[in-house]
Length: 351
Image 1: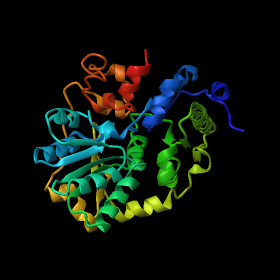
Image 2: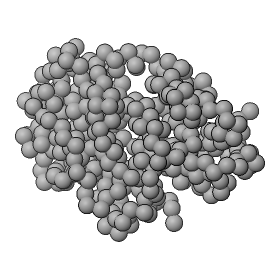
Image 3: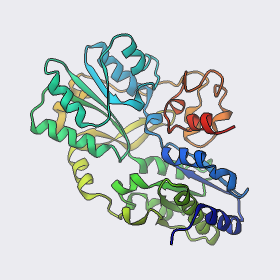
Image 4: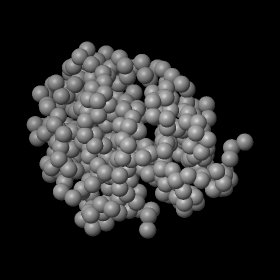
């Protein structure tokens, strides 16, 4: 029988004796923890910090600048709505559209295919960002466009892999993390095997959880139990949805279309093997190759500490711009842009 959030909180208070710092790496976890008030029922020994779990937040400035340069060249750029206000030195997709450039909001990757067929005389570029949950849809788009020989569609693949970022955090002794709350929807696709390095290499618990308060509390309780008993392991409290080998069909499609590459995470830097670029077999749909783009890591705005927030080094109120010059209406950094960004969540829910 599932344990309630209240019951889990009571168990936590009983078993949590040592000071612990647990990191969640999912924007949906971030928002759910704030909205449900979970932090208010945690024992004083337990600290929960937010990591780089928001794909909008980790899309590098240089990647956004590449998309804007395509608009300058007359292309149509399509993107999910949460990417629209992400700022860079040259502005944002939103500011470009307000000046007459052709930027389209889509809610699915396949809408881009329909758009390309609707505009056969225009170059249509899909700004594809996200983690393992959205990568399969982009892979399906590329394969379908290839099968149909659509010549005016290409993809800027800014997709990122979660495990390399988690390992970077786990390996940082300055963060002093005790364990990780892992995102259920990512693990449904990727499986839990890619995170086995947590207990095997770093001696840290890793627990996969869903997004309801009771699931989050159950996940935190399991991490604390492992820490207190000195028995780190990789566990799932997400029911039967997560398999060791993940969604094999989705992974096979991703493997067919994408290849791993080093890529920049905004505010963090280049993480080896964490990006997904198109394989040479699909070079005709690779916007970087098609338009001769060179991605260069961008420079954060003066005073913006999104990188430190994403790494869990500080909480948003410790950034000098938070609630002053940086607000949801006027975001300086991406952590304030997204509804799942840590700064945005702090602004809306934390007083």
